[in-house]
Amino acid sequence: MTTHPNRLIIAPSLLAADFLKLGAEAEAVENAGADWLHLDVMDGHFVPNITFGPLVVKALKTRSKIPLDVHLMIAPVDPYIAAFAEAGADHISVHPESGPHLHRTLQLIRSLGKKAGVVLNPATPVEAIVNVIDLVDIIMVMTVNPGFGGQAFIASQLSKIAALRRLIDSSGRQIYLQIDGGITPQTAHSVLDMGADCLIAGTAVFGKPDYAKAIADIRAAMPKPFPEFTVSGG
Image (cartoon, rainbow, N blue to C red):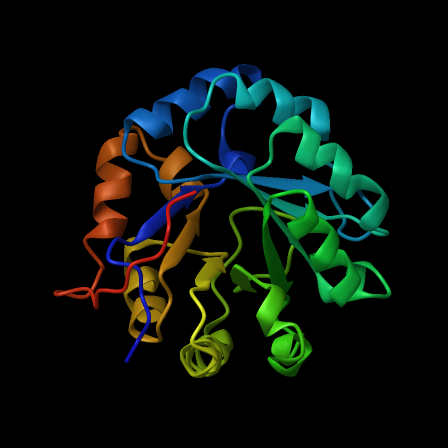
């Protein structure tokens, strides 16, 4: 059985928001029906872009009631995990390539009371996560190369999404299968068919004049009926 939660999770990516009014943008997508707020943290080293750090996460925590889903694109990652946890991140996702000991990194995240995620770049194989499946709450598949918003969806990742759905189902664990990159109402249908249950959308939400309609349009790609499987909220 496909282990979807009974509600498609939509997490607008603040990378595509108006940086002059991040607090207002966070509140706007929450009011428009977003489930999580996705925060891309980039260091200019692991990826060729720079965004924001723990202080911005801390400020957003005062404005957002939905979970803060933090994606750390930094290396080395371990020295910064505690700072993001203390700032208010509810979920912390890391790349296998961003530190020497992925297992230890995931243990650290969970020891701080946060949901732990692993992010697979387009060239990172499914095998990178097999031996840590017991420590993950989120598996994120990058369907673009990390670093910049607005890129085109890489369709070759669909088979990886399907393989990860099989891996999650065989584990018996409640793990979100999250997709990041090039998500639109059209590509959403494809990744949901492969077993995804959490979609990150940047320009597909923040690039539209009506955030509620943009989120509803993505949610409309959900299979009907969406297979039910209860997964806890934040």
